[in-house]
Image (cartoon, rainbow, N blue to C red; front, side, top):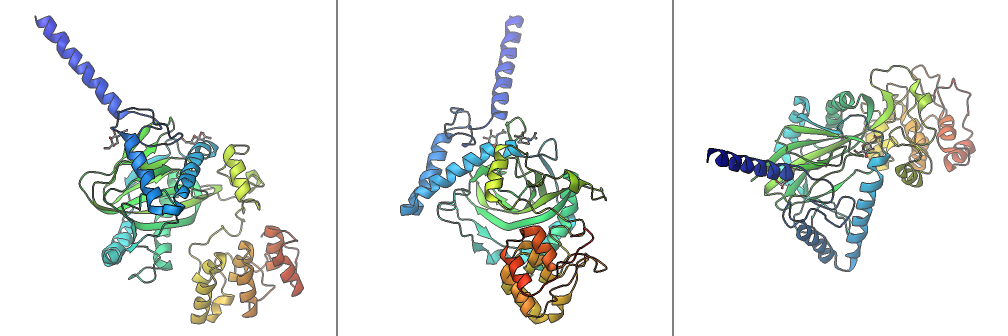
Length: 429
Ligand SMILES: *[C@@H]1O[C@H](CO)[C@@H](O)[C@H](O)[C@H]1NC(C)=O
Ligand SMILES: *[C@@H]1O[C@H](CO)[C@@H](O)[C@H](O)[C@H]1NC(C)=O
């Protein structure tokens, strides 16, 4: 009798264990399509096929005549889920990590959120975009770079970048350049974020939960290195570091609650190891691909198609982007003519202001290939033969144009037509 009872109890425990294990572990194409639209886990997570069909039908109905775009963007997403992660160099063993956001960052974000949350703006999505089910659960932005919001703008954005950069660098062990910042995005009840890998060059990233009002935690689902699903839940103040180009991430389980507000901050590795102060790493870089794409991989082929000019190598004297550089340099590097005009209207001397590496706005615009900005700067009196470098021994604009864009580029022809000098430099671009 005791014996039978014991085995009965053991059986229950075994069954229970089995159910827990099933509940806690599944791979791709269970909660949502990752590599294939044929979901393969039956009822393990409830009727996920119905959830997915409703998601896609919602998009098609909303976009009406353009509804077929929902299917094209969806096919693109799945194709990218397949080819991109396998083509990436990873800098960490797990690909993700949850920590507390640095206090300096939270202070900036909470201040912006509390001042402006009432003035959130509905986010606009291109027709057929399937990243979020915005057709049934609209998303909103309290953008940190929105000049019309209190305290919003370029300065806040660079302050946030400055405050998270070292965290991302320490975690990946790589020197990083800021690439993009998106948010604060506010998701609403019912929201689903379709699982995806980020487009390049969004490589080393973080998500910060700024504020939420939810009935239950809204898990971020990521796929680990063995393609098993892992739920990561976040409280306000939590920061998830993730290798967003290789780690598939989404929120396939609909949000239950009023809202969830978070921000995405993205960096691109330069190829230089953190604390390596030499420029030797430059010799190890591929002559065409960025350091984080595996040569001869399917992702390398996709990257090359989209970037026929090849990757812009960081130069020894100047990283790709100077986050502490003056507004004029930033605008010139990004081809933002109207922002540049207004910066120069406020202070014409910015035309001749060198950043820490001796670069002028003209050098930035030339390297980035923004012809209209180059012409604008020269017409406004920029020195066509100014040299980079702290002591002015570096490149002229024509040196940069030739090195970055080749002699056939219009920018070279334009500079040559003005008699610009192609000085032999000391190898330091
Ligand atoms: C993730 O959370 C969802 C929703 O709460 C749950 O159904 C699922 O089993 C969880 N998945 C994992 C891997 O824990
Ligand atoms: C990087 O991570 C992705 C996703 O886990 C994986 O598919 C890929 O093989 C990894 N890259 C390398 C070089 O191991």
